Image 1 (cartoon, each protein chain N blue to C red):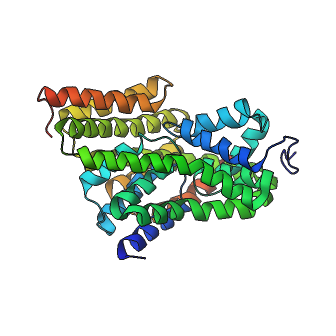
Image 2 (tube, helix red, strand yellow):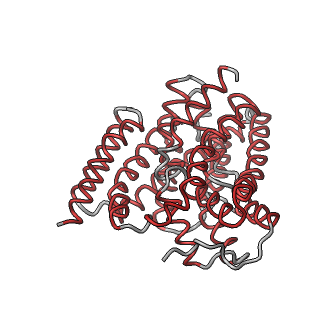
Length: 180
Length: 186
């Protein structure tokens, strides 16, 4: 493994087991590892990877595959995907049958419910860190606020928000309203 | 009690399993929660809604991405280790190709002003989605002072102090779990 692919591996492997709340809650940790710890991407590259990865279908967690590809091509993609998907899947395969019996236990449910506020805190931190990485101007903050409101009020596919955002960006760019 | 101790009486070949999860991946824009239910329960009828909820619940208590765990478990239930591998690779292979194509397209045209503007703006939209989803969750979850406190502590640690997520969770989760357990006992 090259130095970059082994950095990618450790960055995502160390996060894989703590993936509570899904990929979007993990963005702060990915940013800390990829940008701050290992310096594999700068803020702008990270922010655009997070945005672009949402355009593709599939599990949101494949955001790490996209980062892997951007950093180190095919080896980066394979290593990153394996690091985030492999270990939890092996565990699910190994203990899945045994867990079937305990998963409805009231104690486990109580614990799960009590972890939910931590996930909410992670999501809000996630939004903050991605916004800072992207370094938006007024148009950017307006779009962020609009899309948050959309998510809160409607149950529509988030892809619409991303696509509408892109179109508004093109218009704003052409009108000279956005700092590019 | 358990819904899937024995494989359900559904005829499903290994190829069916793989192509089914390929559809889940391809239809899953903005995450696969909706497309997984659509393909597994409504289209292919592999599981009843109740069985689906049960397997998803199992995916949620295990660490890692819930729906990826669920894919592994369903693959295993129907076709063992080979099934798990087929289901997983079916799920991620097509999206991976699309991601690579997107990356290449973006790299080629990244210097065009329109593309830069679109990427920046889509990024701003994506940030809003995260905030919006967080706020949506908060409405249902932050219903007690304890919940608000744990949410605020997590945000301060990860978002403001920029401390690592791992240590944050390791420190806060036991207290949160203990608080939840204590409240249940009362």
